[in-house]
Length: 88
Image 1 (cartoon, rainbow, N blue to C red):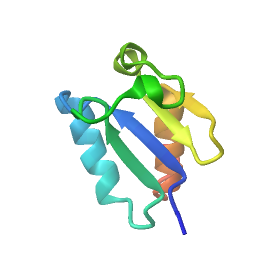
Image 2: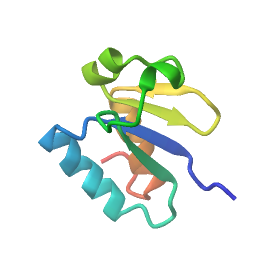
Image 3: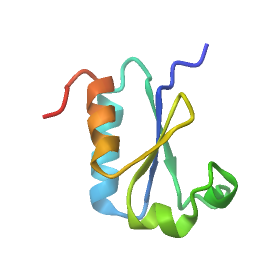
Image 4: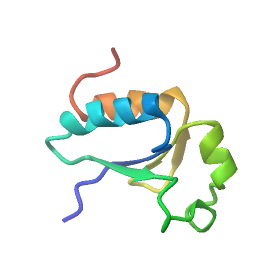
């Protein structure tokens, strides 16, 4: 059974982004979060959920398990709720 409730698309070339992803991964014991580096050579956002690479690089995007897309601070609010920290 798939536990993932939020997929986060992040820029793996951004040190700040990577630090936040590492933090979230360290708290992801229930495996509710999944992380996708938009810069991985085998990944194309244009084919995935209507998010272009340019859009993904301009701001953080998340895909909820119901298929809805969230952006900006809402991604972090959702992620922090899912790892049990609430919105700090």
